Amino acid sequence: MAGMSKLPIALFLLLVAACGGAGDGNAEPPAEIPRKQLEIVRTYPHDSQAFTQGLLVRGDQVFESTGLRGQSSLREVDLTTGQIQRRVDLPPALFGEGLASVGSQLIQLTWTAGVARVYDRDSFALVREHRYTTQGWGLCYDGSRLVMSDGSSTLYFRDPATFELQRQVEVRQAGEPLERLNELECVNGKVYANVFETDWIAEIDPASGDVTAVIDGSGLLTASERAGANVLNGIAYRAGGGTFLITGKLWPRMFEVRLVDAP
Image (cartoon, rainbow, N blue to C red; front, side, top):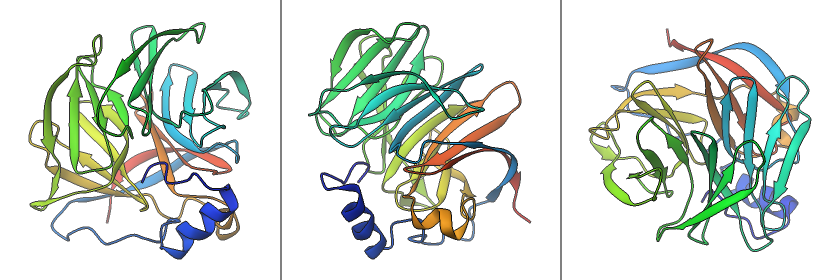
């Protein structure tokens, strides 16, 4: 699950590795699904202690939600240096999860507390909280609705002002439910979803729930970097250049990439 750890990080990593979930638990998607791959444009430093749960970029501002109880935070990060420019820590009982930007506000999910925290983007002041009954994993904003995941095959569409549930859709890949949908990014009428404990990113038609393409995110880290890192998690779209930022939990680097068709 998105925040399966109530354990020390070292023990958590051992358990995930033992289950094949530290990036090598990659069941091959059905052959009939179109494939895309990542073309690296540039790499940036990333805080290797950041348990990345949500990532977004607005102009030159990069915002990140991190998890683990007692370590969860909302951050503004300098993309070029990886340095934290602003940070607010969550109460110790809360486990930070997905993150979305709506107007001048940031909305941060929590894993099992059923609380979405709304912040002023300029001051990081807490404005309000919303309640929900599912787990909170990923979140993005499509310009009119919030799209939310809870680790299942379901996407939930919510009112950005009230967080009221408007509709939901089951995501299917070649006709079968695609479980463990995690961090989300809404881009040009599509939803991109990290599939937890794999290196695959699903491109989803939010109207039908159909997976329209799968993106192979493997091979970004070196073998030595991978040994100290956790799963791929974090995808943010840079509208100006049509590129994405990709990172993961405890990753030492962030990657700016283009999506290209696989040969």
